[in-house]
Image (tube, rainbow, N blue to C red; front, side, top):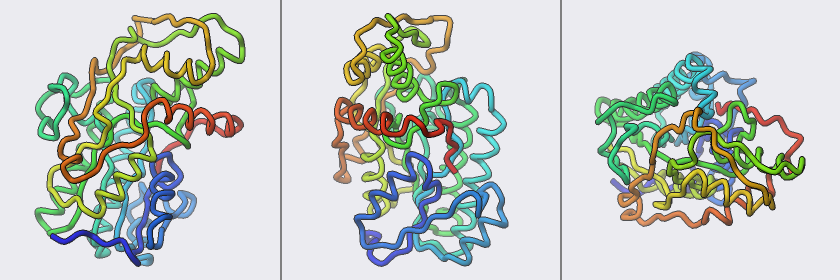
Length: 320
């Protein structure tokens, strides 16, 4: 199948107010296409009739499905119904309406948490559904797996050009820095910044500090999303990552260097670590011709600058 040309296309970025959606909008603004967005005050993506009516009227040529309700371990544990219902509703409404309104291409953005907790490392795309999920984020993971399967089902039954990409752990501008609902990197950045300002001698970190994680800057993901919108046509979801991992302790130390915090760290081993290791195998994406370009140190510096410029903003955001 030929490459999907973006020139002159009407592309809807669903979830444009979130970290991922905002980055995709920034990246698409450099292309010769029309970018469509709609605020949640106008269309609640959890409501099927509202989504269908808007898409029938707007008739996008393509959709980047970045809308989701997201959060870290604590948010997943305290709001399981929201994480499962909201994400299932958003995905099924947009994917089905895309089919019914004649959308030519749809890219669904999932998450690396779809893979089994103890998947062989680095994790390849064929690991999906081969073992139990990580319990601390299974509600979100189950919803994302459903989104992947919906794209596959609509491809197989209706011939839709609907594809999926699985990003690794993301960070960057527009992230959620609220300590009660954020992921590990923004939570650590906020805690370490606060410790520096309050001149605290140490920062407590959940877990042992030993789990290994991979972190991708959201602008790299946005670039990959545009690349895949053009070129990815496979039924199988494709991993998007850096191929580089760091321990949680190592991440905390890198953030401390960026922030200028010179204190120490203590680790609360009574708190959950989550998956012990999560590194994506990105050979398929590299074979297509794309690799990440923003190293962690550079990405942390940029993210910290954005954080300092936006401290007065509400840190809690739901991606829809």
